Image (cartoon, rainbow, N blue to C red; front, side):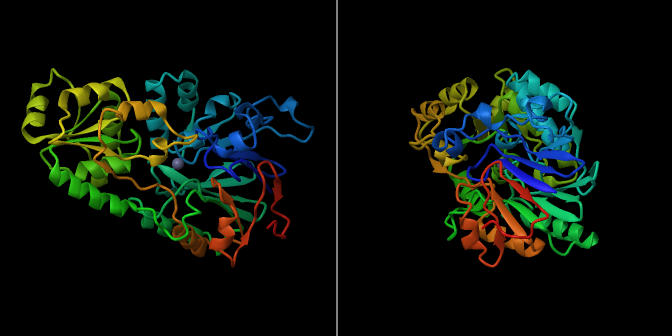
Length: 424
Ligand SMILES: [Zn+2]
């Protein structure tokens, strides 16, 4: 078996990992690079060149003699840096992903008129957590994890007597963060897997070895304080960060309606009708699409206040113009702060949108594993080798886990799982 990290050994986002045997070939994630990504800027690798993969994105005959067709693409979760390039896949390659991820990303793509992706998603096969999918001699088992995207998975790969655990993006401090790790341990124990051969592990937060980053628990504390102080709360948050939206919902004054545009409301309705059936946290019934014709809603907003989910768009602009006042209102920025700072990732559109207003509070925690959480996962699955991906600091994994064998490949290196030697 061989592992190739096509993109992600030295950058966050744009993830593409290939795993192949003599018989089969699969790809995990097909992501878009994040704005201002390191590979594009520092190494001058254009997006077009990075994703030229014969048998995956371009016809097989553009590769060498030994290139085999791709048997399936497995998506870990619906963030663009993991799924954004599915429109480049050759049409016959089967796509696999979580059922809620498929639905929520479809709603997003329809809203943004991404017809090619919508078509792709329609034919996608869906996972059942813990249920293996057989691709010739490769067995792929999706295992639920916790991240800032709903329905995110780690993938356990078994073939030719070896095991690989690909983490996707994960954290232990999110909603039910600890619960999934127990389920992963249980699954491995049932299969009598005492140690994983290769852990392909995200390392977004690796430089933060002393842990200065807030956790989701810190976020909840901040939300509580804020909700007591202001009547009208405008939350700037990703429309698909369901756990965060649920936190704002459950910690609001219970009479306050949660208002949004119709698109956001459709997502919340879907979550309530599916996940909400068995899990109170995902039940968000008092969420309304804002309408000036809904007098009952307008009366509720007037009397008790509200929480409005906004994004940089004209609907949100109108809401702010209509309802924002300095005394009673709070604007909460609940996304990555990098979009607002000078640098390649700065989002000018977002900055312009926020310019007329004062941000009352920055309430956010990343959905990625803190270094201590990577250690906890490594202790649980006891990998013989670790390959850091989704990181700008892969060598920091050696500092974090000096007792383990850390492999530090470059993008597109072929790692043979039959070699036992380290590539440190
Ligand atoms: Zn992610």
